[in-house]
Image 1 (cartoon, rainbow, N blue to C red):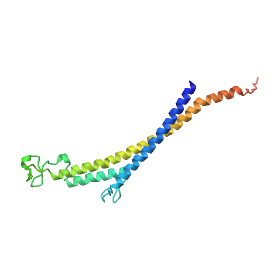
Image 2: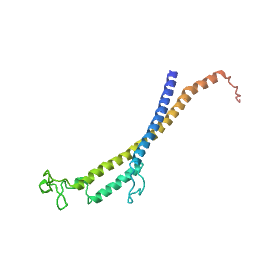
Image 3: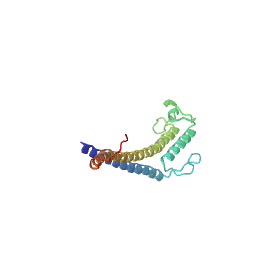
Image 4: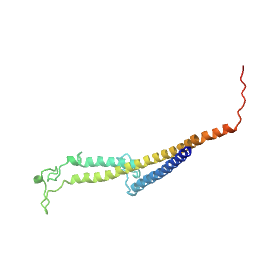
Length: 187
């Protein structure tokens, strides 16, 4: 039974070490891919952002750029979000939700969509991608940390397995073969 526990402990330790190394490698690869893909887009922080004139090539920089994009979109739409804006365009530029009061497409006769809402559609798509890059890099960093933790736990478990299961046997063998020393007892 002792041999079974020893081999089981060693196997578990080796698995933890292997998974730790694997997770760390995957985490570094994931983080590198996020940074490579961001850099490839050649996004540069605007002067009013927290990353002025800086290439956006990390997850945190992507998140910062997404925040400034939202600010610019709110400025362009008079502080209104997509859901707060009227659905259709009008001649006075204010917009309406009433199809009958909306401008009509001369070819189809259908109401014309509010073009300012299109700004939000574009902004949402781009900021979602940027925030996803932030999330992906954060996840990759978490995987790296967990990989290192598994590696260290595996090492510790291996030391513990070898120390506890092999250690007492070695001590017992030594005590059987070594003669006991005489000890003087005072009277």
